[in-house]
Length: 311
Image 1 (cartoon, rainbow, N blue to C red):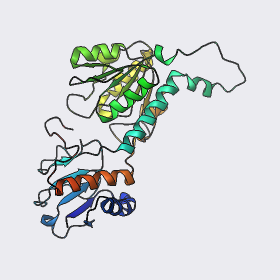
Image 2 (image 1 turned 180 degrees about the vertical axis):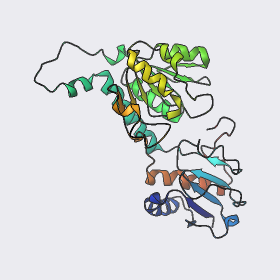
Image 3 (image 1 turned 30 degrees about the vertical axis):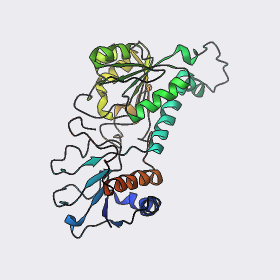
């Protein structure tokens, strides 16, 4: 019977205390589930989320894997005490939530909904007709699980979708580009830009003064990916000059976003409080259970992190 330690913020435990045993039973697993480990060396698996009590992984000498509840692993992957295999969370429900957030905000932008919401003053404004989706260019930076799913949905809605990734990809119905030259081409097509890249040294500040200038004037930015992808000062300057017409931001370098941050009061910025892709305990628990089942059966872990790439 594998011993599994749940090490995450205490507020998460009530939901997982029910979801994990149910998922283990569905997977045919008998698991000893702990929230404290009197003997760290006896722990076989660690279920982890940042903000919990665990920072030093060295005592867990028998742990076969660390199973993250987060899709992003930037707050753990560089921990020098972590020598165990690390698996990130790739949850179908998380992907669905991201697709819904991205699709909703792309359509909000595409249809000009904000102007109608702000104009409930008795004036009939029908002088601007939005283009059809097939006439609108949307670029998705990042073609991992989340980016691919969002790009596919937008292509299904007939948007002219361009995807960019650091390594070459081929996806049906999507113009796929890669590398530095490909990035410039992808940005040039981005009337609406969706950021879904991981947080790595190579992607930090990928949107900066130079790359923002490569986008069409009046473009819109949606960032449900990582706060570190954007040079905040450069984005604010581009919003003030009109190079960028609007930005909807769900992730930030510091969270919660400080009350005095310029984004809060900027008329061209919409802040959402990191809600684009929440991990849902019921479905996430099944992913955890499947990885424990696979490990116990001698099968490779799903979604194992490549330490060199950082995700």
